Image (cartoon, rainbow, N blue to C red; front, side, top):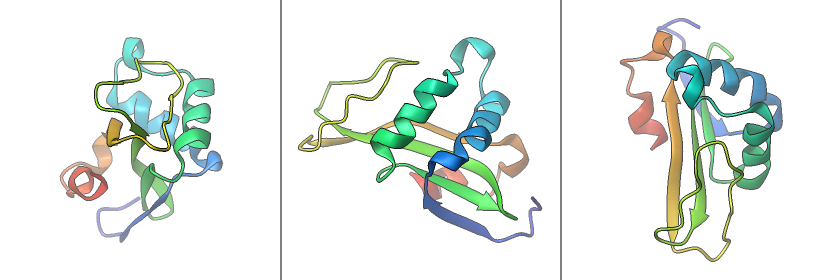
Amino acid sequence: MSRHDPITLRSIREDDLDAVLRVQAACYPPVMQEAADVVRSRIRAAGATSFVAESGGVVCAYVFAYRSSKGAVTPLDAPFAVQEAGDTLYIHDLSVAPAAAGQGLARRLA
Protein backbone atom coordinates (compact mmCIF):
# COMPACT_ATOMS: atom_id res chain seq x y z
CA MET A 1 0.00 0.00 0.00
CA SER A 2 1.35 3.35 -1.07
CA ARG A 3 -0.17 6.80 -0.71
CA HIS A 4 0.02 6.96 -4.51
CA ASP A 5 -2.04 3.82 -5.12
CA PRO A 6 -5.66 4.48 -6.08
CA ILE A 7 -8.26 3.79 -3.41
CA THR A 8 -11.05 1.36 -4.25
CA LEU A 9 -14.25 1.07 -2.19
CA ARG A 10 -16.23 -2.16 -2.30
CA SER A 11 -18.62 -4.30 -0.28
CA ILE A 12 -17.02 -6.27 2.52
CA ARG A 13 -16.54 -10.03 1.97
CA GLU A 14 -15.83 -12.96 4.28
CA ASP A 15 -12.30 -13.27 2.91
CA ASP A 16 -11.61 -9.75 4.28
CA LEU A 17 -11.79 -11.02 7.87
CA ASP A 18 -8.03 -11.17 8.55
CA ALA A 19 -7.42 -7.77 6.95
CA VAL A 20 -10.27 -6.18 8.93
CA LEU A 21 -8.86 -7.66 12.15
CA ARG A 22 -5.43 -6.17 11.32
CA VAL A 23 -6.93 -2.70 10.78
CA GLN A 24 -8.94 -3.08 14.00
CA ALA A 25 -5.79 -4.04 15.94
CA ALA A 26 -3.95 -0.99 14.55
CA CYS A 27 -6.79 1.34 15.57
CA TYR A 28 -8.02 0.13 18.95
CA PRO A 29 -6.53 -0.98 22.27
CA PRO A 30 -7.01 -4.70 23.01
CA VAL A 31 -9.94 -4.06 25.37
CA MET A 32 -11.92 -2.51 22.48
CA GLN A 33 -11.08 -5.13 19.83
CA GLU A 34 -13.92 -7.42 18.86
CA ALA A 35 -13.51 -11.19 18.53
CA ALA A 36 -12.93 -12.75 15.11
CA ASP A 37 -16.11 -14.86 15.31
CA VAL A 38 -18.18 -11.73 16.05
CA VAL A 39 -16.58 -9.82 13.16
CA ARG A 40 -17.20 -12.81 10.85
CA SER A 41 -20.87 -12.91 11.88
CA ARG A 42 -21.15 -9.18 11.17
CA ILE A 43 -19.71 -9.59 7.69
CA ARG A 44 -22.34 -12.26 7.02
CA ALA A 45 -25.20 -10.30 8.54
CA ALA A 46 -24.43 -6.86 7.13
CA GLY A 47 -22.33 -7.43 4.02
CA ALA A 48 -24.69 -5.36 1.89
CA THR A 49 -24.27 -2.27 4.08
CA SER A 50 -20.62 -2.65 5.14
CA PHE A 51 -17.60 -1.71 3.02
CA VAL A 52 -13.80 -1.75 2.82
CA ALA A 53 -11.30 0.59 1.20
CA GLU A 54 -8.35 -0.99 -0.60
CA SER A 55 -5.07 0.55 -1.65
CA GLY A 56 -2.70 -1.54 -3.73
CA GLY A 57 -4.94 -4.55 -3.12
CA VAL A 58 -4.63 -4.20 0.67
CA VAL A 59 -7.60 -3.40 2.93
CA CYS A 60 -6.73 -0.15 4.69
CA ALA A 61 -10.12 0.89 6.11
CA TYR A 62 -13.58 -0.50 6.78
CA VAL A 63 -17.04 0.48 7.92
CA PHE A 64 -19.62 -1.81 9.54
CA ALA A 65 -23.18 -0.53 9.24
CA TYR A 66 -26.51 -2.30 9.65
CA ARG A 67 -30.22 -1.60 9.51
CA SER A 68 -31.87 -1.17 12.88
CA SER A 69 -34.57 0.79 14.65
CA LYS A 70 -33.72 4.14 16.17
CA GLY A 71 -32.20 3.54 19.60
CA ALA A 72 -31.60 -0.21 19.10
CA VAL A 73 -27.80 -0.27 19.26
CA THR A 74 -25.64 -3.41 19.22
CA PRO A 75 -23.17 -3.47 22.14
CA LEU A 76 -19.44 -3.94 21.64
CA ASP A 77 -18.42 -7.52 20.77
CA ALA A 78 -22.00 -8.73 20.16
CA PRO A 79 -23.58 -9.97 16.91
CA PHE A 80 -25.67 -7.51 14.93
CA ALA A 81 -29.44 -7.76 15.29
CA VAL A 82 -30.20 -6.67 11.72
CA GLN A 83 -33.74 -5.43 11.16
CA GLU A 84 -34.50 -5.49 7.43
CA ALA A 85 -37.38 -3.05 7.94
CA GLY A 86 -35.35 -0.85 10.29
CA ASP A 87 -35.70 2.91 10.03
CA THR A 88 -32.03 3.67 10.73
CA LEU A 89 -28.70 2.74 9.17
CA TYR A 90 -26.45 2.47 12.21
CA ILE A 91 -22.68 2.85 11.75
CA HIS A 92 -21.18 0.55 14.35
CA ASP A 93 -17.49 0.92 13.47
CA LEU A 94 -15.47 2.92 10.96
CA SER A 95 -11.69 2.42 11.12
CA VAL A 96 -8.80 3.65 8.99
CA ALA A 97 -5.33 2.09 9.33
CA PRO A 98 -2.80 4.67 10.54
CA ALA A 99 -0.75 4.17 7.35
CA ALA A 100 -3.77 5.33 5.31
CA ALA A 101 -4.74 8.29 7.51
CA GLY A 102 -5.16 11.73 6.00
CA GLN A 103 -6.59 10.58 2.66
CA GLY A 104 -10.25 11.25 3.43
CA LEU A 105 -11.16 7.56 3.67
CA ALA A 106 -13.44 7.94 6.69
CA ARG A 107 -15.45 10.59 4.87
CA ARG A 108 -15.67 8.41 1.75
CA LEU A 109 -16.78 5.34 3.71
CA ALA A 110 -19.36 7.21 5.78
